[in-house]
Image (cartoon, rainbow, N blue to C red):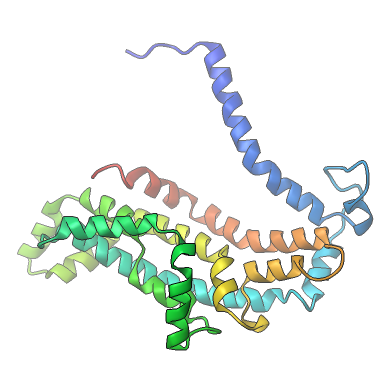
Length: 280
């Protein structure tokens, strides 16, 4: 029997939720406000939160900047994101299906080794990875940024495996009785049912690639190959005073596509989070 919660407990819960939400929303609002400030207001003292004379001139300056070619960097980022996204989703789903549905010797050990790779931080393998890609002649190209994604990700494999294990086996058995192969069951039965989990994996991967700075910084050599995150870092580090309003205008331009994508996929994303990883 549920007991009614006291008004104080309800108020404390709402206060905590509002506080946590503000911790995430206020930096975004502050970024937008500074991006709309003219140069004279950016470093004014005492500082103001909202712009007194809002202007879109910082956005025009960014669009006309020679050191931050937004359209070129966005195109490079989009190419890397799409190529790696296709490979990541396919390879992770196939590996997860094998771990969830197919019995083979050493399955548990292989899955444990797969999960253990999540414990290895990228700086530990950065040097040998760089040497390998240099030996392959991939340094200075996009290949190191999307080809490794075609070999899956331990975290994504884990998420998808947990979701696949929650799908009743009777569905596959019925399909096989009708003549469907194992591969056909994967494509026609499992993947359509796993759309929410795949949406979660896809969105996590898009966010990781879109905001990745270390990978492009290590493997790319020419400015015309820069991604948005690397271009933003280049804009920040150029000689002279940092143009904070332009820098935050560029940051806003980078964040908008991801925010729009999240809003469009919000319902599927939340449903996938709610149904993934609950059964093991």
